[in-house]
Image 1 (cartoon, rainbow over the protein chains, first blue to last red):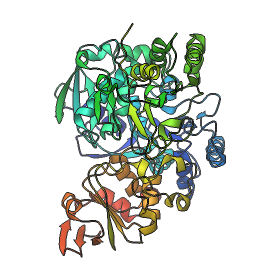
Image 2 (image 1 turned 135 degrees about the vertical axis):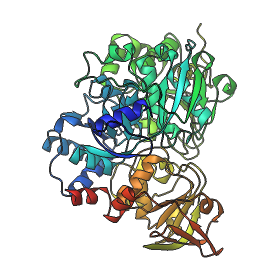
Image 3 (image 1 turned 90 degrees about the vertical axis):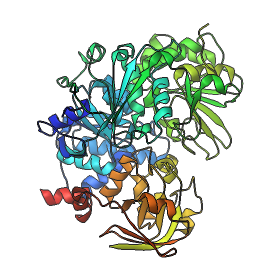
Image 4 (image 1 turned 30 degrees about the vertical axis):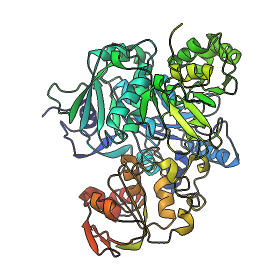
Length: 419
Length: 162
């Protein structure tokens, strides 16, 4: 029986000729990742279990991104604990303030993750790296601790849902509209325990940033991972960037999928997920009476340079509506720098937005844009659960950078239309 | 191993943000964090929950963030078991790794009512609703996962395997 792309990668890393769905495997890991919230718990577990060294200092990444520059004393203590651990164990990929970025934008950008890798991260959006043709999945802190100690993790080999992508996106749509449309279709547990495998002639019309965004939100459909095959677009991105050998795997022609869903990109419209689940999707054009108080453009989902470019395209020369706070957060220092060079930074300020250094901050209701009771935000982030961005009676609408920026100008949820 | 206590009933898609809101995640101290367990969907939970009580929920329990703080605070509050129609995969993995007993049983999750007295026998996976007198058989864990639980969690099982 043929294997899916995910199964091929898991078989390789487990030293097996083949694997099948449901099989338990122990896989060798290329990268074990943690952040300033999940790493302290992992460090405590690592020490409690009596481990005193990491399996490979070059295969561990610790990124301080959730609450930095630190929002309070307790957060500072957590960062300090990560910093000390990284120093003691000479962790090569330790990213602190000044060079940090939001982990899932940073690791691909820095070439720390690449095609063919097997990656775990103590952050649910670790599935982002599937965009590069890697197997990557989120785990908890104990799995991170075990991964740091042994370089291995156990997995139940997942079955897959195939997504046959055809066509080309309209100008005002992006990867975010694709993944929101898919989650709206299959639900927040529609891919529970499974892989979401994207393929088809239409993927050539999706950029790396689109693919990273699509795989990033696979977890919002319950998936173990999302993955794209490696093509010229992937190789253009990875060549000269990857610190490890690029390994290209392909799904077998007779690979088994639980189902194959066709996604016609040309039929996708600007999509918004309404409170309080990412599956509550509607067309942006149906929501133009929804008044907003805040806009957030950033996060591991949409804080990349193409997202900044989209925001710039909409906001340049315009003014943000009175009474609306617009917060823009480029996801890494390199992206922030690029925003300065390209003049986006100035255009954002002139439009009335505030621009922050990289942080996960508002996405998870940490800081840098917390909502008060009854307030409403349209955000390019990934979750709109109850209380996600602040008060339990606040609301988050999820959308693309185009839609979020267009909404900032009108003060209501707005579909972007090119002038 | 058994647990016995009152049922707290919730719907589908209970996410880790309501189990433990991120605004409190500036500390890894479980005792401190446990004071806020379920706060955003049930502000009375922490005041009412007693050792051995059971959380009963619908589909996709624990969806969202990978924060291990979520099963840790549920355990920290004394909850003896979570019964759900299904669990989000990272939560499922985390619960096993930290030793929070969880059981998948759609019928029990459907029929058990809030405040029913529930007994769970983990050795055979039998859930008994003392209030209604009804028994349910939960899905047993695969042997591999059972062995992690028996050895006291993932890291303990790794040390043993050295």
